[in-house]
Length: 149
Image 1: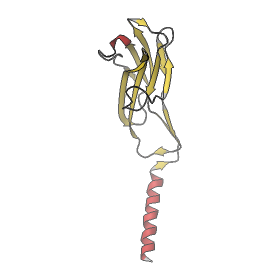
Image 2: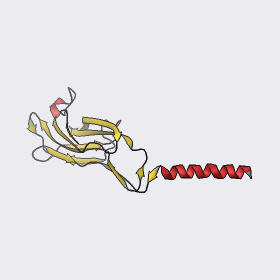
Image 3: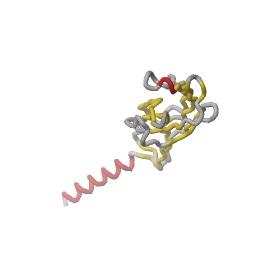
């Protein structure tokens, strides 16, 4: 009888802790920001450049990309944030988010911008980049982003 009571208390405690770890309210967070920018080559807007977004920090060539876009006639591009939607609000809401942006240059994907953040909730809402493809391999192709909260 004593063993059954101990087992009941243990199981009840585990269930209670699991139920209190989250709330029944839906929760959505951004794992990457809105990324807007312009791609240049020799100071001229680069039309038709394929861009890839990966949210895996180790994916430096965006082979596991989750979003893709192409620059327009003015070299402009935009990638919407990657969202994570949950049916509940987790108790622990601190996350490490990482993202890489790659460009298809001469048939190969090249890393042009990378960032990360550790914090509560969602990442910053928007990043604006100005990227020069001629800098690949020499220095960071994209300028330091203008962060907006």
